[in-house]
Length: 188
Image 1 (cartoon, one colour):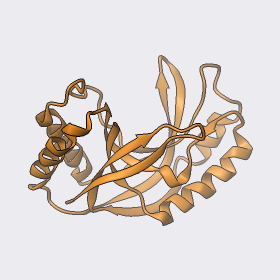
Image 2 (cartoon, rainbow, N blue to C red):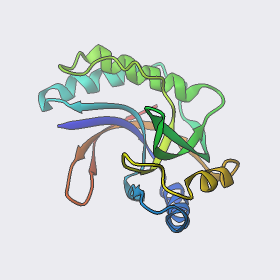
Image 3 (cartoon, one colour):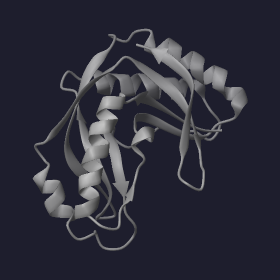
């Protein structure tokens, strides 16, 4: 099973970001846009995990979240780009949580994953950058209109939402794009 751990995004935020993407599609040609209904705040991508390891993972997540401070709010604001080897490849919207609760939650999830000792899943070494992916683009040069569209929306906000749980999702790769099925939910 291809798994990841994430926080769900409320419908109102997804609707606002869908409207943003509709406008951006006119300005920036050539991007592969995500489906708004699939948007989530990824805390940890796991990859392929045996179904028999799911209970052990769930136990570790539950144990590690037991000390959480509870739900917290996250603001959705500004656009950015993730470079890969010097070239931007992902267009994203930033998630801001100034108290540090989101970074702590990510650390708790990472400890749970490491504690579960899942075969083939290694400790994550990349720094955590909370975001919601809007679009991806290929190996070529960045599409025309990308830089001005991002710059024009740097100070823009799309609301806030409360993170009150994390979920283990299964990613099902389909010809029309990935579909996500929630397997487990753990309250903060």
